[in-house]
Image (cartoon, rainbow, N blue to C red):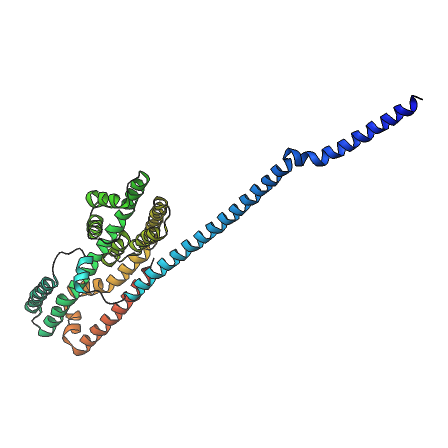
Length: 333
């Protein structure tokens, strides 16, 4: 009799335990809020993923806009350099040579120098045609050659000092100084001609011109590729941002590498230049020696008409040969 109720009670207890366990499994997450927590975690994760996707998309847009701005800046500078192909004025050429004289003074000095040299040649040769030729060469050719020589010398000195000036800007920017203060330091403590050019940049900024435009004007007075690189770097940094010290540090390294390459090219071409100088001067040396030791033999080239024609033809061929050798040993880099 006891076994019947006990077995029924045990069976009911087991059923209740089983039902309670099933209810615990399915109802506890709902009652305890665990499922809501999981849903919130999933919602947070999905929101984070959406934020990351949006952030990546925004970064891609920023990079695209920056690339577009850099491309537009480069195109602007290229168009400006292509559009400015007009022949430089005499005043600009005097500025590039570092001369502080006016064009009127240049013409006066050229005329005086040409007349003096022509008079001396007339007194020596007693020939009006030779005096006129010397007048043209001394009054027009020599001053132009002198301007070109002074311009190249000034540009060479400028390129020698420019990397050090850029290093000053790099150290100043890393120390927290603005670009304008770094330029003032260069304008005060650097050497000429960099000091004078940067002083003009600082003065241009004082009247409202942007640093990029002010430095771009330096290229008009010192038309070398290195100055154009410097102007492009500043213009890109001004318009699209970026690490200015790192960009200028890389530019300084590039300028020093270009200088090393130029020196290497010059050293490798010295042998060819020496050979060209010997070949070009040998005919004149032989003619001078023959004139000294056998004057009667060489006088026919000056007094006879056929000899004069041969001298003119020889001079033309010598000039062509010198120009060809000069083209072969001068490298554009």
